[in-house]
Amino acid sequence: MNPEIGIIGGSGLYSMPGFTNQKEVAVETPFGPPSDAYMVGDLEGKTVAFLARHGRGHRISPSELNFRANIYGLKKLGVRRVISLSAVGSLKEEHRPLEFVIPDQFFDRTRGRVSTFFGEGLVAHVSFADPICGDLASTLHRACHDAGVVAKLGGTYLCMEGPAFSTKAESNVYRSMGMDVIGMTNLQEAKLAREAELCYATVAMVTDYDCWHPDHDAVTVTDIIQNLTKNAENAAQVVRCAVKAMGAAQDRCKCGRALEHALITDRELVPAATLKKLELIVGKYFAG
Image (cartoon, rainbow, N blue to C red):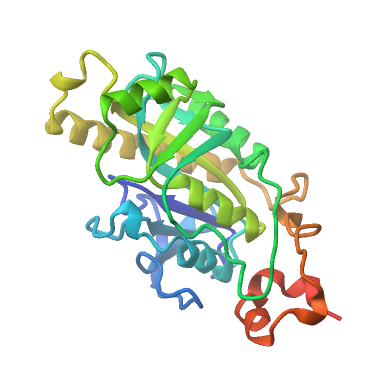
């Protein structure tokens, strides 16, 4: 089974309904273990790999996630396109709970997270001006329409450290900066997917308004859990529609060539151990 499509499920989404012929696949990486075993199976006639970002049972906090292992594991399985599903808070009145946003930008407010495969004698600077795959994002937006889910294409996902949520002061500053939604995980995934030359796009599922909203204090944990559950149901439908609409991976986008002009280090000076560690990612640029 060689999955070409990878799905990363966030809070509330720990499995993917509709899988057939599924099996659990443990993947070893040079960066340690991924969040969980990958579930590989058939969905809408295609082989797909699913990973619960926080582990089944939600055991791993955002700051503890091994982002490198998660993305490397998908690459090792043969995945070329990654659909990331993420619960978020809304920073704008227009993004209502139970609606989806497919952001085209990220803003980093994390601290000290590792978000690159490179180092140890091999330097790379990838282009990240447009951090998501436009083709995949458009496919996901159409899939939302087909699934009957209200969704906006475009917007900025602010990635905060967590695990605590924002103060009101922070939330209002983010709003004044024009941010659309706030979450804790997707920026590192997007950076690493770009370095791994994978197409990547996020479906940001709004659970509630962030604490800036005057009605925020009236929202209960029960309300949020209900929204998480409903969003998970909607996300499963969106994924099914998106996977069904996807043909074979094409090279219209630049994602599969992201490292073409990004590797800066003199090839003769790259340590053998580093090259071996990153063979899966950079091997084609050192062949011959």
